[in-house]
Image (cartoon, rainbow, N blue to C red):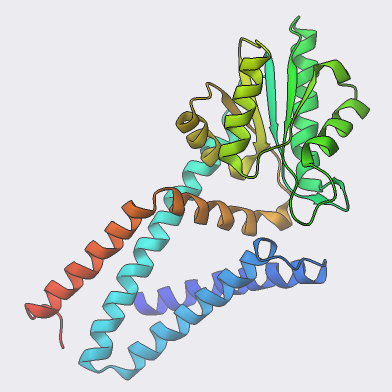
Length: 278
């Protein structure tokens, strides 16, 4: 019964992920990060097939392997659910939207212009800027993002242009154009704020799926800031959260490798002591 439930759940998840990936392909997505839902769907489907085959074979060896596969897959599923819960909580936590400094994190451009995901971050930043200004503050805004290999200008330039076009005074917009990842976004932006002698409350703006990792990274880089999440389009959510999950796994890679190794050791002990058939 439990194996049937597992197989059905895997099939449903795989179908949903593959369908999302196919829609992304039809919209023109070609990068791995944009197609993670499709890749994950195929991987879950392959896991489902492997579980069914091992269960059908029914030999002592296949049964022992089935236990190992389910244990490792179960650990991965629990880790993802814990991550997803923490990400959703962090992404939607209420934060007082007033600050002396706003740092908006960049993401890829589309033909030199801000992408829909980046526009969501910038629009949230602009709203917070005006809210802070109405409360009597004069916040500076740091547009943080370097130039990717497939981009003809820096993300910081495109972001600053968008901010100014939407009512943020150019004198309050600072460009941080060296960063290539979230850690560098936060480290270089913090250095820029210190060099400009900007003091007071700092808010970092990113997409909601990215808030958890950004908050962890901010603490590691010593940037004293709260993180705000901007909405993410429904079509982009599966790949975005999967990408973040992979990034968080890498951040705590040795811990997770140790946990999986412990699962394998326990399985081997059970196999060696006769608790599992061989």
